[in-house]
Every structure is written in C-alpha cells, then in structure tokens.
Length: 568
Image (cartoon, rainbow, N blue to C red):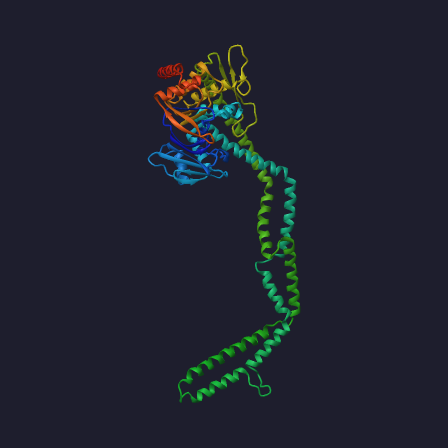
C-alpha cells in the first residue's frame, strides 16, 4: 500500500503531498488543474518512460517520491535488497527525478538504481488503469491476460512448465532445421576442413619450430666464418705451437701467476692475486676445450643441412600463408579445426538425436497446451458468470458477458489459445467482442467488473483508475463508485474522477486546486473534509461550489453513498 505521494515541479503542480493510505481515495479537481499528474507521478515511480515535457515550466527537474508499506519478506523485499536498497520498519521509499533535458534517475530504498528496478517492483505493487488501458482491453492479448489472472495459480504453474518445454522445443527445432537445411554445405565444409587438416598433419609443425629453424639456418649460412672465428680464438687462448714467438693467453696467465708465486713469501697480499690468476688459467683452459669441441662439432657437410632446413622452413611458410599469420595460428587452427571437424562429422548422429527430441518435445508441448486449454475453458465459464453479475450491479442489468477459448491455433509462448471476451448489452442483441462492439462507457464498466472479480483470486495491493467513469453518468456512476468501494475493502484504490457519484464513495477525498497569478498556473493538493468536501461535490454536480441547492444535493449524495457502502 502506498501511504504518501510527494510531487514537485511536475506539470502544473509546483509542490504537493498526497496523503493516501488504505481504502478508497478519490482525486478530483477542475479541468486543467493537473489531476492526471497524480497518475503520471505514480507511473514514474513504477518505471514509466520519462518525458522532459512533464517538467514544470522554468524548473530544472521534476521529483516524485512515494512511501509504501510493504512486507519485510517476499518478492518486493528481495528485489529491493538485490538493488542495494533497504526497507525500514516495513516502509519502502521510491523516488524518481526527471530533468528538463530528459535525464532520469531512480532511487529505491535509499540507493540509486536502474529504472528497470522500479518496473519490476511496480508489477507486484500496483495495477494502473487509465483510458489507454481500457482501450487495451480491446486487444486479444489483454483479454487472455485477464483470463489467466483469474484462472489463478494452477494455470500459472502449467504455463510456466509449458514455456520451459516450448522454449526447448523451439530451440531444438531451429537447430534441426539449420542442420538439415545446411547439410550439403556442412558436408563441403567438412571435406575442405579435412583436406586442410591433412595438409597440416603431413607437415606436423611443432611449437617454436620456426624460431629454432631460423636460428639453425643462420648458423649454417655462416658455417665457414664460424669455424674460422672459433679456430682463431682457440689459437689465441691455447695454441699448439708458438707462432712468431707470440705466446697464447694460457701461457701469459701462467707466466704472470709464476712471477707472483716467486715473491709471495715476501708479501702475502700477492697470494689472493696469484689464486685469481690460477682460476683464470683454469677458465681459459676450459674455454679452449669447449672451442675445440665446437670446432670438431661443426659439420663438414653444412651445405646439405642448410638445404634440409630451408626446405622445412618453406613448408612451414606455406602453412602459415594458407592457414594463419604465424605458426602459433596454424597450431591453433589444427586444434580448433579438429574440434569443428568432430562436430561436423557428428551431424548425422546429431540430426537423428534432435529429430527424436523435437518429436518428444512437440508431443509434450501439445499435451501441456491441452492442459492449459482445459484450465482456461473452465475458468472462462466462471469469469463470464461472475462478471455478468457485476455488470448487473453496474447499471447493466440485461448485459451478458461471454468468454470463449479457441484452441485451434499454432503453439506460441502463451499456448495455442486465443481468448475472446464478448458482450451482449441486452437481450436480442448479437454478442460482439468488446474489441469492436463496446462503447467507452460499457468498456469502462466491463474493465471495472473484471478487476473486481479477478481481485478475489489474484489480489493486488493497489489499484489506480484514471477516468474509469468516462462515458458514464447517473445511476451507472453511482454503481461504479459502490463497486470501487467494494474493491477497496481488499485493496487500496486510487481513482482520478470528475463525477461526484464516484467521489462520494471515497473514504479519502483529495482535490487538486489550480491557482494562477495571471502569468503562471500552479496547482496544489488538499484533503477535503466536512464543508470543503461538500462544496467540491457541489461543484462536481452543478459547477457551483457555493450553491445552497448544490451543497444540499452533495450532502444528500454523500449520505446515499455512505448508506449503500454499508449495505453492500
């Protein structure tokens, strides 16, 4: 239940606070005073699309805030918690701002949240019926939704199971069609992929092989230079024979060590240096041995090895050119291509499996659709009877409502049923669909009757009606007011109305009052009681708020409404 609604700079309303609370709240006011802004404000709190044109002229932004009383557990509490908001002592604050540039921001339980969160929460809090919603009742979808709400939990459970099976069946059928339709193309793809993979497997590239081959190619291409450099280096380090009396490095280091060892006994500081020279000699000897081994290891037939390396590199280059931009990509192609080939080679088996699964799912879809048709057909009879009773109480005593379920349609997400609501306004008239034959006033009463009936099986915390009495007057308007009062016994009801006969049944009467300084129109909201309420009722009845006869008539209407509300 929404306890209070705050509005600032929305339409012609500069600032207003609407005390709502339980029961039946009627909102009235002069034409152009901004009554519909109340419904607009609620719509914003429920995630409706923001319109920068609704921001009051001269204001930077409009702001709407609502305080709801909600349970500390349940779907609403869970969604608020997911959004990071809080419900304190059963109170939930929702807020929405709309800037003059069109930007919008939502607040849920004290935390900023996506606008979509308001929509999700609003679905569990409020049902709004404006004139557009009355027109929506003319659509087959809205008529089916109304029947489904009335049918209750058993149908919702069947619908949920059906949708799960239908979704699986639809996805499998689509895959089967794709595989069957593209079978020849997939066979060609498999053949081409197998040929490419055979080419890669014939070469059998290894990770990092291209780098290794590049290094070998460079080495083999410079074999003679490498042998000459190594030989010269070996000769300088450790020559087998002295050339031109030039000693090698090993001999020089050994000579230096011996010179120091001769005088170590005179200065022990020379000992560590002599030891370093000894170690240097060992290292030079090791280097000489390694160079000798390197020289011995150089293949005399390097030209033949180079030819083999170059040929292998050419094979890898060809693979890279055909199957990737690098050897790593070729290796990845071999991996993913193999997986894809397994998938393509399994088409026949997959098609067989899918065909069996699609057939089984189709049978289950048909079975569950039949279950829903049965539930809807049974509920249709009860809904028609109950709404017909309500219409009699809404000054349509001879009207008869019929609800037909036509199951002769292709399965869809909602089943295979098309629902039609037909109205026979009086005996002898041909029943016609409310989508074509109902007047505005009849449609208003049919919608209200349906909501009153559905509320018994699918209760909603709050109903909001905007101009539910359009096209209605006299006794019919009184009965609409009485039925709204009856609905308010189970749910909170908020009604924007221009009829005194409807407002008379309200337990809470709010008036949107228009004021102007000649340049700017600003409206405010006031709760009416006693004489103020009688004056407003007189204005609604005759347009004269201060007429004695109008006030007397208003007082009489209020007493009548009070009496009828008590007697039901």
